[in-house]
Image 1: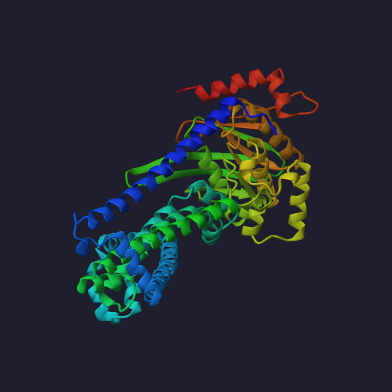
Image 2: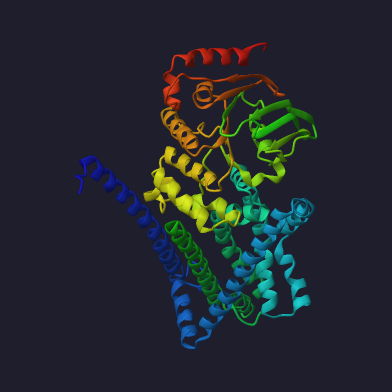
Length: 265
Length: 255
């Protein structure tokens, strides 16, 4: 083992110290927020009926764990999110490949994609209920509609940015357009596909919750609407907290996939 | 002796909505089998366009390009093309990169793969076959790129400034290296470069092109009185300086 110099050790120490201080600050903000929230409701500074409190949220969560309902709602939301996420990835890749293969088609469809992408998808939800009924299909379609147009645009742009010389290489080796797609465009776009996935998993969750607001009898979006209607704000805020945790978990999951991909490469 | 590759008054222009940009005008020359031709010209004169035309990637607007008497468009598989950068794919290991062309042309037969293995051993890349391109030096990458091109057993090699992305020192050794490999494999080759000394040290003939639209200004045959002609040896030969000055003059004459 090589001798590590004093300065190198000092450098590593500084680096670790810096990283630790970041973690400490993050935890501090979280704990301080919870404490402040709890104390101000306990001493009556804010109304715990409207603002709930960390303890009330935990109690609410525990009762719902005991009667088993919360896991069901979480499960439903997750399933819907995953289904729409996978469909977005499949539809997104399929259509962007189609656009890449046919330059004219992409030119023709460009304005439509831009409009559909900027359209607030929550505006579509009521229509979807009428067309598809108040069921899971509507919610999944809502989840897809939020994420799919952006992914098509991102993926297609990524495909177009592939080094033209790499494409030329395939032609000089006697390849055709299909070879270019399979040997260069798709493999070199994997980082873009992963970064699109990172955005999409969050967007799918957004779409699913919008769908559940309007057309569900279960799921966290439904719990939020239901809780607000019966003025049980513990339930509403608890559902929001769970959504936060789910969002973080999903993002971490995609990060893990990315790390595995980079390691494998 | 009948020429192997013939260009007959080839012209080509690029088109866009602002107008027409003539790139090549009335280019004619012949290449014999086993000959190494170097093409020099000012940058942006259409040298790369010329190679794309010979490779059959684009078709000339006027004139014709024949390989052994048949149109290049019907002989694309006989042409090997080496680009400026090696363009080895990072998501493939060296071996997978080298057989890319065979994969694309569905020629993964033992006949072709044996040649690949032979070249990997001969050119010192055998122990690197499972490595990623980023683990290799610039010179080795360029060798791998050459083997990728040679794997398809082309009868003519086109080299589009294949050393220009390398630093000067590597460039000298790599051009020597690649030059020797091409001589050893007895390939007909056309090298495009803006580096005069590279052209003189590698070529049997140097074709000098004018500014755009490129026309042929001169074709200079290169003869070195060397027993064992290597690119580095040529650079040290007495005649080198004279050829350099002659071609330099041709390039800058009338501009």
